[in-house]
Length: 277
Figure 1 (cartoon, rainbow, N blue to C red):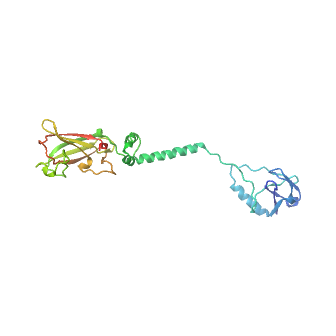
Figure 2 (tube, rainbow, N blue to C red; figure 1 turned 180 degrees about the horizontal axis):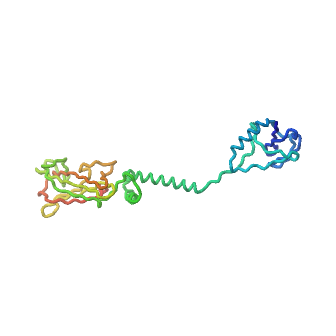
Figure 3 (cartoon, rainbow, N blue to C red; figure 1 turned 30 degrees about the vertical axis):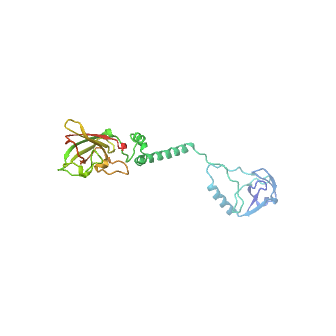
């Protein structure tokens, strides 16, 4: 059997031999000298105590430094011990692991990187809800990956077309010229304009507005209108203008039913950015 004593001054626990229980002891923790007969004691089986100490030693932090051996005035083998299962507890180490500022910096950089990546990934949706941000995103997405983003660049388009006889091709009429012209006032033989779009760039582009001018034999405009992609039958994408993939082509027909002073013989087309709407 082993006897466990509690220092009456600081509460530290010590293991002493039973035959030395009547001696005057000095606490190795605080230096107080006290009579063992006046201290709180607890008798514990040696095997139980050794097992408790072994479990505690295995769970101690590897960097913790062991306490120095405590010696009593009359018992040199007195040493600090752990509680064997009572409410008494031994002093705990105040050692704290040192934090590395590099990890904090790396964590901050990682969070910022993830947030920035999320913004680039959602660039198209953000620009649709806040068109004023488009110039900033077009500048950033020119060098950084922005999946699904579509550029607005009227100068990058190749737009061509021709006047086609409506007797050969029919489509939904789209008045050109006076928007208030009645259907009954349309000319007997309507015209159609075939408009071709070519995206020769390596980026997805938003379809532009098209300025359509019908010209007479002298090259003078006799009617003109700014046509939107929706007027040509192109569906919008998430509220934004339709788009065309890199190196792709498409075309549409514009039917003209508004009365014209003379039959047009020429055509002039020009692309404009969709934000002019």
